[in-house]
Length: 274
Figure 1 (tube, helix red, strand yellow):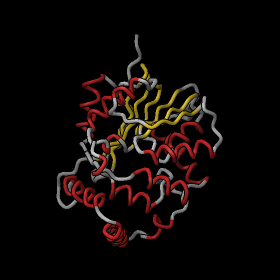
Figure 2: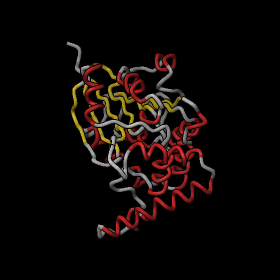
Figure 3: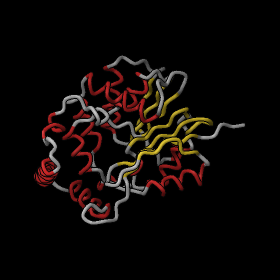
Figure 4: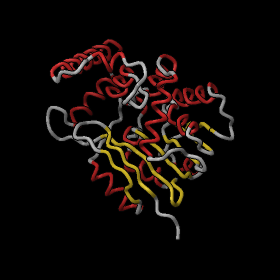
């Protein structure tokens, strides 16, 4: 993929970890992972985080008791952010490893050990080759293991069509600082108006200090991630299911869908070898 048309995800997540992450956000992230995977803990399991971003959900897997966590990301700032969290929580190397690499690099992926849980939340649609990335990720799920991903929903109708957002995200990613600030202000203004129209407090998510209901995330860092999330691909829940199930035989264990542009959530199980 072309670096010149890629949002600097890692810089945004470094800022999140340095400025917003606290104990309450970590707790909500752990809770969201427990709910997403439908588990009480990850004891006795290995965990592979593809596109670890801030490192928060690799940390969550460790806090849920995973025997070993392996994290990697293409963005060097994401790698640095994840390594910083690992050091901050004093996790030993034999429990958590962090690398830089691409899910689209066959040589790199050949060196990655398969895991009981392969997790890639909101990542593979930003690679520029989403279907290839999904295929590479599924290959790292151990027999009887779990594959958890989220992929942006495809919306064809105006005014929130996915094609329109593709152009907005590319414009934001290529734009200078003042253009980005203007686009952020416009987005937040529209968000506030929509909240008011539906009789909801527009300040509640903006001022939220704990990230409850947001996987521990923080409002403005989420806004920048959404506006700048380029490359940007998308698919219907049916398209994702058909692709994964048809190619791998994985069984769908959990599905959460959305009508808008949000991420549909999938948990697949790989059949155990008989």
